[in-house]
Length: 188
Image (tube, one colour):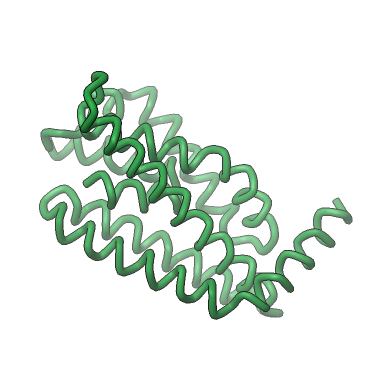
C-alpha cells in the first residue's frame, strides 16, 4: 500500500489523498488514516486534484505545475506512507514513509521527463492522452491497493520501471522539451 501510494503521489498527490480519503470514508476501509477522511481535507484535496487535472492537460502549463510539484509530491508521498504505516516514532513507519517519499520522487521525475518530451509534439492530443493515461493508472492502482496491496505494488513497480525506461529512451526529446519549456516561461 505504501509503495503504490508513493507511486501515485508522484503523479498527483492531491488525487491520491482525495481518493484514499473517499475510499476510507465511503468504503469503510480500515487502514486509511482518519485525517484523510475529514470533510475539510476531502474538499481541499478534491479542489486541488481538479485544478491539477485540468492544468495537466495544457502543454507547458503542465510542466510549470510539475516544477512546483517537485517540492510537494515527494514530501506528500513520504507523509502518506508514514501515515498509512501508522507513524508514531517507530522505525517501520518511518522506513515506510521514506519508501513512499523516494518512490514519489522517482515517479515524479520520470513522469515529468516523459511529459516534457510529449510537450514537443505539435498536436495537443498526445498531451491530453498522456495525462488521461496517468489519471487512469493512478485511480486503478490506488483502488487495487485497497484490496490487493501486493499486486498493486507490483503493478506500480512495473509502471514505474516502464516510465523510467521510456524517459531514458526519450532523453533527446526531454532536452528539446526542456528548452521549449524555458522559452515558454520567458514569454510569460
